[in-house]
Image (cartoon, rainbow over all chains, first blue to last red; front, side, top):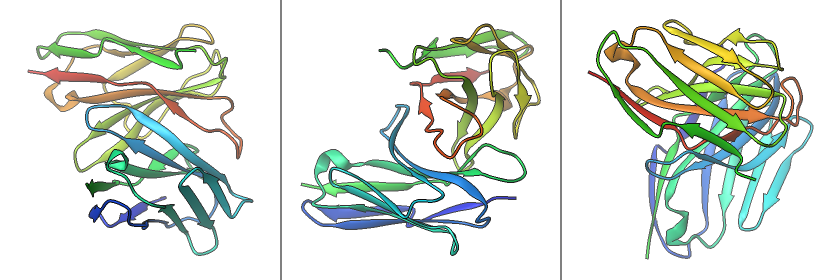
Length: 113
Length: 115
């Protein structure tokens, strides 16, 4: 059964700092990995999707990498801003067994002004 | 484009009552999904519809039924609500089901409380 773990569970940084969020998964047979952002009381906003054949994706100040063989992904946020404060979720779409998104529990990020 | 829309936004039910959560997408996506989000449990898949006319169980289907009304709409029904179904429900859609490029897009959620 696929399991997704996100470390740390919570993170507080001063504005302007570069930071890395980690995601690991137990079964490397995946179609893709997706990073989401969730604001309190809101839905999920898709940030980046990395296909299984890709190593990284970039969008603005965000860069996500994927190492499928080791079961790891990182989300790098450059020059963090208070508006980046949210919970960040990673999810993997499995290639075997139940084909659906399996989510991590998220990293709650607070960027202090 | 509105993306994925859900109604209602909030709902309070008494144990044993029934209700239907509505979801619609205007992105011409083939696949649609229902998830629930609970503290400490993360998001879990309830049911999905890989394409119009098909539905299948996810991780936690007990106590729920679904209907893929057409390509745009996918509803979730609670026949006899229980307190354990208190949760936030999210609908999502993607262009395809079985593809490495099936980015999922989520609705704003329905916050359901069962007393």
